[in-house]
Structures are given as C-alpha cells and as structure tokens.
Amino acid sequence: MTVLVTVIHDLNHSQQDVDRRNKSGDDGLRKDVMAQHIEGPLYYERMGRSGPVMAFVHPNPMDQSCWLFQMAHFSTWYRCIAIDIPGYGRSPKATPGLTVADMAQACWEAIDDAYPGERAILVGCSVGSIILPHMAHYQTARTAALILSGTGYSPNRDFAQRRIDSYRQNGVTHRWAYTFEDLSPAFRATPMAHYFAELFGERNNTADVDTICLQFEALQKPEKPDHFERIACPTTILTGTEDGAHPTAFALQKRIRDCELKVLPGAGHACYMEQPWLFDRFMIEFLTKHGLFAGKTAR
Image 1 (cartoon, rainbow, N blue to C red):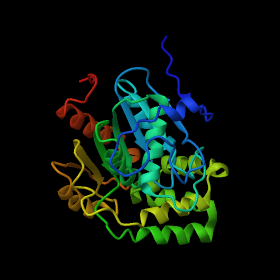
Image 2 (tube, rainbow, N blue to C red):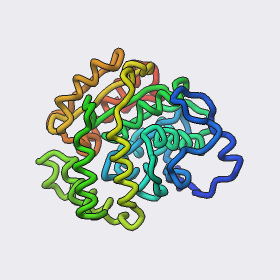
Image 3 (cartoon, helix red, strand yellow):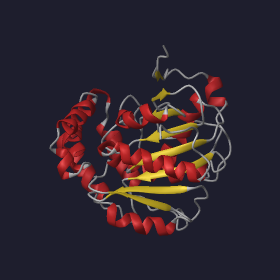
C-alpha cells in the first residue's frame, strides 16, 4: 500500500544549501545570499513524490496548512510545497526594513531547498497573491504560471494600516477573528470555519505579532508602475463573489497581459478553502490549457 508522507522541512541549513541558491532575477536583489530582513529560512511542508513543482503561499492570518485540500489533491500529479511566510506557522521572525521582495526571495529559497533550480507553478491567496508577482520577477525563467486568488488591483492598500492597528490592539489572538473575515457570511457559520480558526489559533505560540505588522508595513509600499505589466507567464485570477477584493479583481486582470479570470459564486476571500472542488477544477482547466497539467482526472 502506498503511503503519502508529508515531509517536514529541517530548519538546519548547511552552507551548501545557501550556496546553491539560484542567482538569476531582475528585482535588484543579490542572489548569492539569503533573503534580507528575515531571521533564517522559511518553514515548508511537502506532499507528492513525482511530477512538476507546485508552490503555495498562504494569506493572512493563516499558515501553510490552509492549503490542505489542494496539497492532498494536486500531489496526485505534482510535487507540492506549502510555505509559511515570516511571522506565521513555524517560520522565523522578520526585522525592520522587510519588503515584499524579501519575502519573495525567501519563498524561492524554500523551493530551492526542496527542489533546487526547478521551475514551479505558483499559487497564492491575498498576501500570497501579492508576493507571487515579485517571485515571478525574481525568477522569471523558473515561473511556469501564476494562480492568484483573494486579490485585486488596490494600489493604496488602505487595509494594511487597519490590520496593523488591530494586531497592535489585540495581539496575536486577533488571528481567530480575522480568519472569519476571510470567509463568506454563509461559510462563517459552519463547523468547518470554526475548525480552521481553531487550527490556526493553536499555532499562535509560534506566530509573531511584530513580524506580522512588519509584513503589513511592507505591503503599504507602492509597486513599480509596470509591476503587473511585466508578468510574462500564464496567469489566472480565481475570485469569490463574496470577497471584498472581488470588484477590483477585474481591474487587476486588465493590467496583466492575457490574464484569465474565473468566478466562484458565493465564495469569500479564501475561496480555495470554501469551494475546493470548483477552485481545483478551475486550476486544472487553466493548467491544461497552457500545457502544464501533469496528469489525468477521473473523468
């Protein structure tokens, strides 16, 4: 009997791990050193033993475990890796000066630790979807495709200061209430929504409020004028109608060349958690269209 094993990342990196970091990219960052303003390598978990690489970057206030449906499903055909961004899960703290580009570089370092030098399909939600274009610019040739969700075109990102204020006032326990804000009104009332909120809250002892606030400060910084126009890989946006970002998703689509968009009716910000059957189907259709789907479905 085949046993699926989730391989937990060993946080002890050797110098060889650091030396093998890929040196290409166009974000002006040094590629021969680890990401700046982060106190060590990011934590990740893997599932799947064969196929192309697929990497998942989570939203606030969750951690890598929020991708459990997609990790279980897509590991049928891909080597999946889900990454904790700084301040969440088991990833290290950040220091003042943290940028989105730093987080993008750190995510690639996690991918390189597991799958050195390989191309990857990148999947993200919310802040994950903000990080992904930076990852695409940092490693253009290695970015096979972007699958964005919980996102839109919001150049001012006014939400960031509100989140900082909430975390400063309520501390790390704010994550519990914040989880429900990522969900549609209908899903919030379900036992599954409470299960997820408790799952993330049970890891508060390894989360860091100061780092979370630094992350939101990084999100406040404006992007370059051609930030989205420079995306060169196949890209799609999967957006839930009950997501506050939904109205702006169409504006973002217009800024990304040949960007596709699919709507999940009734789903909230974390649409991949609420409707994994539809989210995954849209992913498979997109990947198949671009010659990136690595297997066959049951039908």
